[in-house]
Image (cartoon, rainbow, N blue to C red; front, side):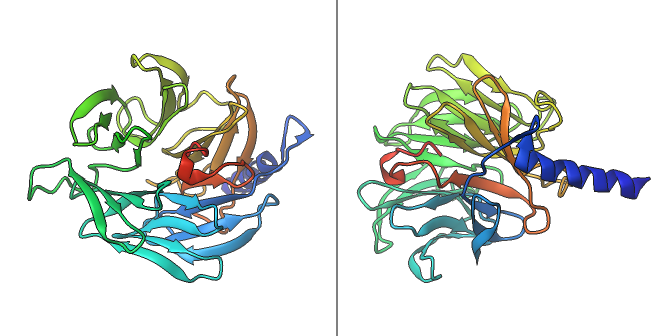
Length: 304
């Protein structure tokens, strides 16, 4: 009986990645990071792995305009070519969970337990650093996850352990705060000024994705058990598409490996239009960027 149930679950996940409501669904090519397995991947629209590279505890990944991958790996950030040559690397004294290539060619890095927002030039030289913690204090493993430098020079930081998203100005002063029950993992500032947040599995709120306006009012939300046939486990990566759809990575750690879909695309009306699951190749997808969306990631044209 247990074997039949497991087989049925696997079959349903496979069907979900190829068809919904009896209609064929076109897949997306994408880049993703697998935190638990310690790898980054490039996957075709047919769901086939075209590239993989070791990356310890990788939590953030970008496909750059030149085709290279930028991602965090343990205490470092790397840029790797498709022939697996490392062309940029920054080593931190603390754990790193966020990275972002900027329009000026520099790289923004969120250093978690040491609580620093760092910008380095192409040679790896620090050109700016903002400390969010008192000197010498260690914020711990849960201090921050995803972080982004905004066009106006401010920073958005997901403070996972404190269950809050904070916006800091260029000097590190808090200018806005958004409660994020469940523990925020990823955060995106949208062109309309709203903020999109993915939350983990802490407390009663549990996994959720929600969008707030500039006043902090929730204007869109998906809760843990709201999508038919899909239970959100621990929401990590996000991407808002030009058509208004939202792509979410459903991290399957904390005892959930193999028990759900890895990626979900929903419409603004919360209709599921695409999912992806490959439990043979991957364990826990933590960050995703679709590769069939036009735009320059260094100029903020990919909302990821």
